[in-house]
Length: 114
Length: 109
Image (tube, rainbow over all chains, first blue to last red):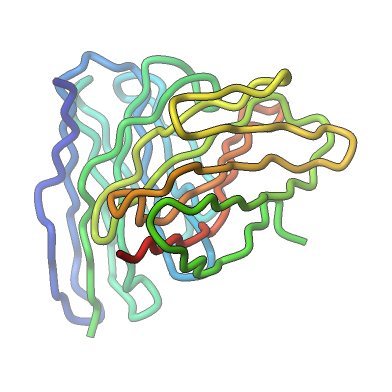
């Protein structure tokens, strides 16, 4: 059974703190993605990666960075968390390039920034 | 204008009813279309792809209308387990996936 695992389901951080969200997939997928989901806005792409050490900005990369040192792991970093980054963060992986195949999502990480 | 728009609902229907809803997209060159299902506090999962000729998967039927730039999802004989948020997903020519905000369906006993 395919699996995308996100390290933390719920986090509470303070403004200015550095936040790491980790995602691991066991399907040997090249493509991995980070989205945030907010009510009324749908899923918005933050960053994606097509290969190890490769990253591309999505629609809303400001305030975020990512790291992909190994094929199975894709990390999202908030260098200095702000209250407007309170959201549900979803990691996904796919065998094909974005838009042409099924996305497999992790269960999500709900981040609250106080 | 949003790239993908959905009626947020909620659509409240009794068990056994038929429910249908649409999703409109703005980019006429969009090439691929999908419906994902998201249960409360869970991750989205692919429900079905939407093909030009329309397609059916059990009680679920998806249709694509390119002329009017919308896709639809119809659920027949609704079950309690169909209660979820249904996300419309559209792939543009640049292979960018755009997600709708979702349509919530609640099936009551």
